[in-house]
Image 1 (tube, protein in one colour):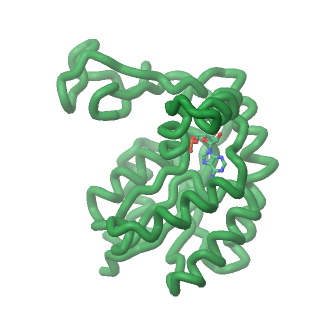
Image 2 (image 1 turned 45 degrees about the horizontal axis):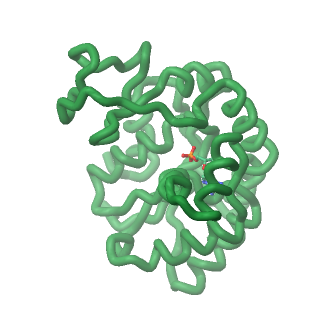
Image 3 (image 1 turned 60 degrees about the vertical axis):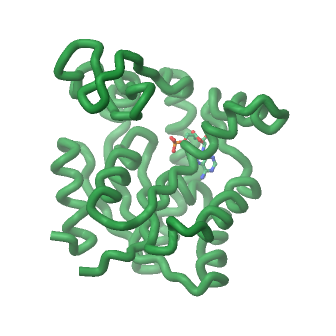
Length: 220
Ligand code: AMP
């Protein structure tokens, strides 16, 4: 079984990329690189870049290709990525996909698989509007599908504080879906032409989708 994998998880916002990436990292000694999480951390900073990013993210607008490519390229060089990584939320545009190919070539690395998690828009909206996380350990919950066992208490760490993402509101999600179709969808055929694309149905439970991904990666 090959364990040192370099994978891209792609799909519409709310398809489950982050959840599935975290589960894969429990099975494999590889690193989860979420560009959304990296950007949200930047956006908290009281700097001109932080303020600009916060405005963009709150509206569902993308960060610039230049910034994100630079960020991913240097992150891949860090020690915890040497055994492999899962890119979650990158590449999100064709220039980012082309840049990833160049970056990996320069570093003498190859991509093993691009997995598209497919979920229709109606389900996406319901999933995103209902989701929230523990403010302390980031465990994910949902108003309908995954409530904590004890009301208001995190199953994992016992915290009673939870947070929702500022961009998880109906208007911003609509914009994020438009951006996905316009800018991210073309990256899927880009990877298909390179023989790297695997499509997985993401409408079932978290466990069911995880099983399908494990099968694609030959981890079963
Ligand atoms: P995510 O956590 O993947 O849903 O990303 C949250 C937000 O961060 C997105 O709606 C974009 O505004 C921004 N973002 C994340 N990844 C990228 C990327 N690769 N390129 C541009 N913007 C990004």
